[in-house]
Length: 229
Image (cartoon, rainbow, N blue to C red; front, side, top):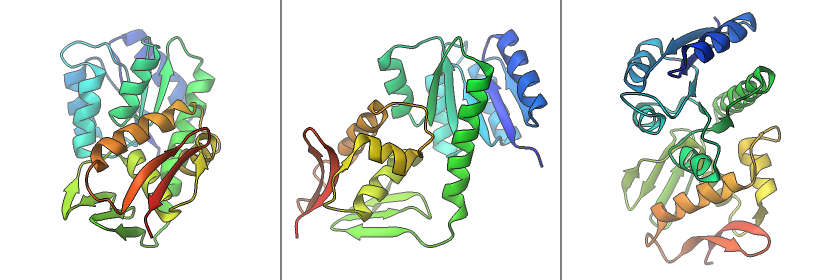
């Protein structure tokens, strides 16, 4: 069965170009030309990956990303002419898995799609139970649930994967490049600021939960999950 990709973009020419190119590569592709219909098509089509524009009528890409993340952890690649750092940061904070700036080369788009899909498949392929607990926190990678003080928290998949990796290697310092390699995959096409964005969001969620552990910056090196033993 073909991998299904949903392209949500108000530029019909871009949608058609992506559809033709990806179908030629063996993918099944659906399109939507505004944010509201994009959410509805997502629910009915159940794609394996979403290509999402930002500037669209009815609902912009930020809102669409929020609504998808409320119901699904399917990977999202934002594809937009908004190429400022703040736009990339916002997209990643909302739970996007990658961010491409328009105009783009179709071969690069295909490479990014393959990287993200491969990474997601690798995460699903392990059937071993993956859960770790410390004071007032439980991180369950097999269920993709973060529990703080007994309450399940909403958290984007990549934030949970980063937190799980650091917690299972507690008191060990990792550079940004090492974290990109271990959590995002060696073939990730983004940059190290991705790690900073995810750590910032994690700290907001973890603030004040316990004084027995912390997500700590080691200046000039990277990050670690520090446990007071």
